[in-house]
Length: 406
Image (cartoon, rainbow, N blue to C red):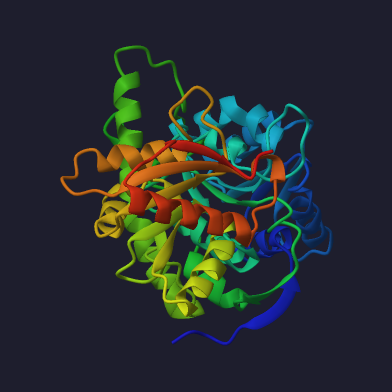
């Protein structure tokens, strides 16, 4: 049974900051960038008011911010940061270092288009550019889910079978700056749920010691590893992120017991008719618009569904295969381009997992909403109408379309 909660009016950025406060992070280091800045501004107020005992480190760039986070996490602290767009791109080198050191850093990303031209509005080009960095990637739909997912992220990242950093993404301005009612848990409940960071133990020359930088038990993190061991380190990261899938599902269920809120199985969230033949797959805030259209179609007796991907890394391949098995046509919506590829990144992942299926739906791709271009119910209806035409004619004129472009 869920616990009694307080409802407060906050935006997505403030929801992220509130969750970070309740998770009692030891260190936060970040550099301001729109539309993430409110997260760090709000958290700085918690620090100034004495509401947290967090080491708040200001730096000259996002590259430095992630470097500080790596140092703090390596020393055994619970660590977080926040960024967006060019800030995440500037971190790129250190994002890979954090994962390869197996450090459970949590980073909130208010998704924003990458330049150029300069744009401050949302698409997923920034986080998709980091999709192979070995970070867990979870996409939240609204401020409530931002709050819930940040809390879960620490527990996922710090799990002994995972020990990988985690990004929590949400659409800039659409979610980051939109005021909504958010139900927040009592501080003591969050504290009990997340607990304190558990440091894994490793064997060093016959001695079992904690995997952290400690003058009493010296060790080296990130030493030179050439062809003799580099490959093995990367293979271990693959195992860890595979382990994360089950952990995400378990923590999604565990969180539901205290909050009353559950996001599908934690990996994906279907909505609509069980016997639908047509479906849209998308990430983030677009799912809310798509669900509105699904509800409208339901009143007209039209059977369609939307499947929202919450986790992009680890990619829920088997879960998606099961969710798609009775569909005839699927439209994958990508809010980032796949320039030079055959469609966007989400489309290519889903098309790949269907290759070996004997029975599989036909699949088409829509690139949409780049640079914050509005995604209206009318555009979502256009996608479903296209699917209906393909179902009737049996012809796919274009595998990849650009939705809402002039």
